[in-house]
Image (cartoon, rainbow, N blue to C red; front, side, top):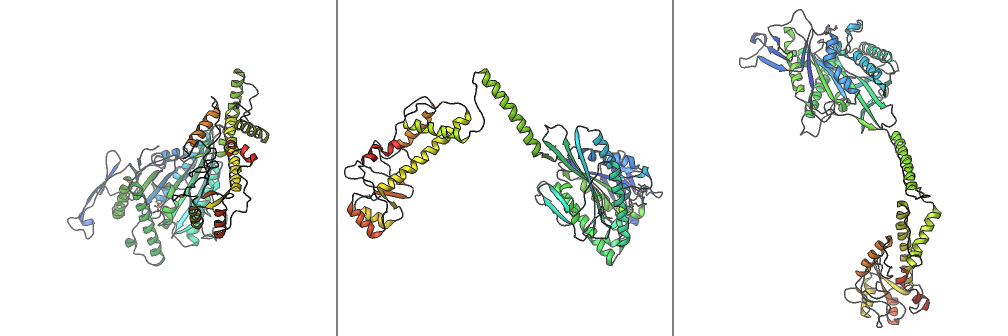
Length: 573
Ligand code: ADP
Ligand code: MG
């Protein structure tokens, strides 16, 4: 994984009695093929035109049996599909050169069966050899003809394009074809009969629609999903292997066709050149956009071309001199493909259900571990379960008593309890903040900071300085100067103890110290965007305010009320 790999490009030469020995020669290692074109055989050739070509490939299959072709071309890709790597094996070449023979093979002779049935055999054989895994196999068979999609395994009688046209859909898991039937096959025989059905449909379709089957692209896909049989393995792998029999690559000009045939040829030429563009773009690491959607073929193969897949190309060629032009063009295609690099990667997924089960097991084990640990350290009766309401209420009460000073320490029991203690500190504090706020509301009139009219009235009355700070009352007893966030909690000097309340009290003190004025119980009188001014004692201000805006309807509490004084705000906090 992670290593870049080249597209594997093989050439298979169709056996012939009329092999053009003087024009086609193979390298000694069977990995190169040289083409020599005699000038006079090349019509209209001018002197300086190239007449010799040498193609380096991954293998030249000449007079090779179906068996050898499978071993050389497909075996590794299929085997890796079982390990989670997507793969695509495709046959390219002019009509009659042997693509279908290579891919499907001759159905009448078992020995001549092609890559498709052999791949299915290999898959089921490997599944048998892997009893540690539960592997499911599904297959589908898609035909693309003139940019229309056909399901060759449709359970409905084959009547041409399906009533609801199939569409290519993309999701984070990959590309799939909506409407294409995907068949679960639990054994080789099922898969074979589906393949046979597909081949039959392909032939029927070519008759009923008067279309030449070599004018369509056929994609047989084997989907695999492998789950480990051991419960502990949360990962599972999915993969698919596409076996593609492409439409004939012959050039349009040569056939001199018109009408329907012209239309077919145009579609084929386009889709094959888009296929080439897409594969080349995939091999270019600088390219971030790959033109997959230009045609159905590349779009349907999007997650199986180049990229993270194993890719194998078999170029089928004729060995006769008469076909040399097409042979040359096919070999050029092959050598361009060979340059493309891919980066095969495993399609690993996670089984959520298994993950939960594993986590539950782990949790139970850890609880046991904890119980053993507690009993060894004589800590019995420690409960680690989530707390109920009663337990939380008890902690709340402890926190209150601690803050009031009636409880000296809060014993640490476990982490959950510590967290709850902190939580209850927050709860109690926010309750007390609210209490303070409403007490202050009762005592002072609130002025919105943006209420300039009131502020200027207050300033006129000398209650606020030019910077917006409130000026204290002449006796300086009730409040001082300054504006500070209300969240500041001055006040109670928490007793210093080497317990967890230390942290709490020290931070409270630190914050309190940042108040502009210290040493007084009630220094800080600002609530977010509002400011407070005394509302009861200064008749002038009250009069002034009532002229501009409605004053608070809350009855102000006398600031010297013994009850209030005995419970100064600072001690409440
Ligand atoms: P294509 O699909 O490329 O149009 P086919 O696979 O249909 O070509 O081949 C055309 C004919 O040649 C078929 O009758 C096929 O059986 C035969 N043929 C092709 N390749 C071979 C081969 N390697 N050995 C024997 N017969 C072959
Ligand atoms: Mg064919």
